Length: 307
Image 1 (cartoon, one colour):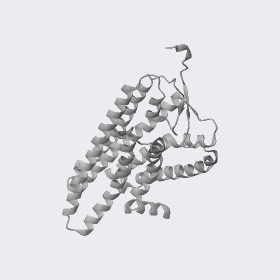
Image 2 (spheres, rainbow, N blue to C red):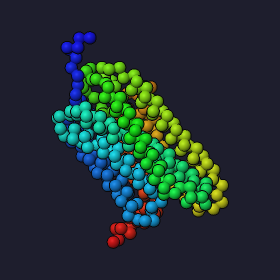
Image 3 (cartoon, helix red, strand yellow):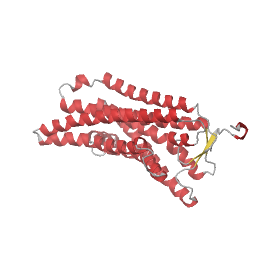
Image 4 (tube, rainbow, N blue to C red):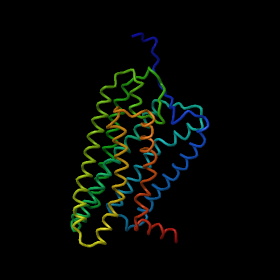
């Protein structure tokens, strides 16, 4: 095995989005602005919801939890990427790499379950409005949120535990802008087949289960809306669900391309584009998707601004 010629890597080099020197500063400025807007949007939405007692309902508690997950997703990737834009030292230790993946993976999985729970919430609210206060109690809402975060933490902990058994001696260069798990498998000199199978199995099960929950919930929601005779009530129901459906479409569309269809032909640049959209753009868009047409959130914001 010529073990004497094998040097185990304890740190990696993140190659980033591009190695073009002239693009580093413009990209830094662009992503810095995006990150600041993302943080203000998501944390501001959380603050608005907790500030107004009228927004302490299951729908808004789920929304604030989703905003927290989005803030964590963006913060797990963007700060390190911003540093690398201005630094010539793109190194990241193994511990930092595993921590970055853990934070990213936890928030990604949590978001999957939160989106499905939010779809179920809309199903109960529109299809069984009289039972809604009983079925979707604050206690059950808290349990749903807790379970979503628990599964997210647990899944990432399993992957990190299995990553620790791998050794990296082929190369320490990661051709990506963050420690993406599939990129780590490429430079592992230990056979990662068990890791790969678990990633694919977990991703498929979680995404299919949560996505089907959303599809089934909205199947009943749409039929319930179409049966409404009141045009105003129908319009309000569609408006409430429209934001969530747009967020779901962006999230799952990108996620399926990133993992479920991984290896089916996309180039390295396309993979980076999918990851960039998921890790940075979606957390930027979500607070505005849910807020701009939400009269209650806008009303709370106006009250605070007038004080």
